[in-house]
Length: 193
Figure 1 (cartoon, one colour):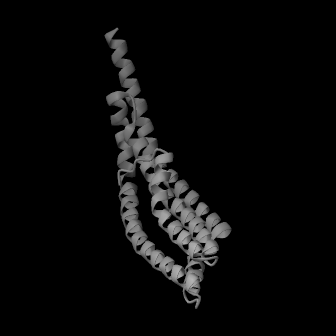
Figure 2: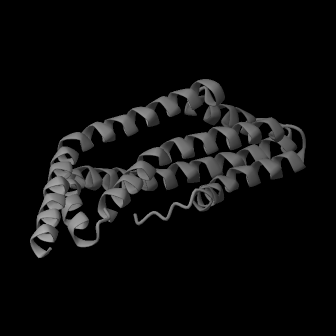
Figure 3: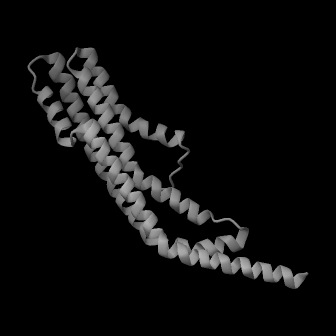
């Protein structure tokens, strides 16, 4: 009985090693698929909602030049908020660049750790955690683009109506920062980065 258990254990270890070997070679294809999905989502959002970042900035800037104070002042505040978001997202995306780079370098190591995890407790936490973290950090760009295009276009639509429309527009721009946290909570994403 002891010999049969050891034989089964070694057979399971060999299978885990073979799967680990396959993960090392095919994890890069998974990364490319995730990157292509993100690219397609960004293109779709740009075509359907945006028209590009420049057109949104240009529309707000041209509204800020309006002589009418009920249009020009909220547009100026909105433009300042957009510049603030630009600087904030510059740092967010630099951090994201570093995290995705580190996760990319870790991909082969995760493949090797798969067999170690399987031996330890017959589960692979390292692979599932890596895949979730990598996917989230790559697809975060699509979430930001969707939120940005939606809220800025909504803000532009209500901007010119009145002073109250300008206040609502500024609140919508501010909500972009809060919406990412809500999105993470809805999908149960607890990013370690």
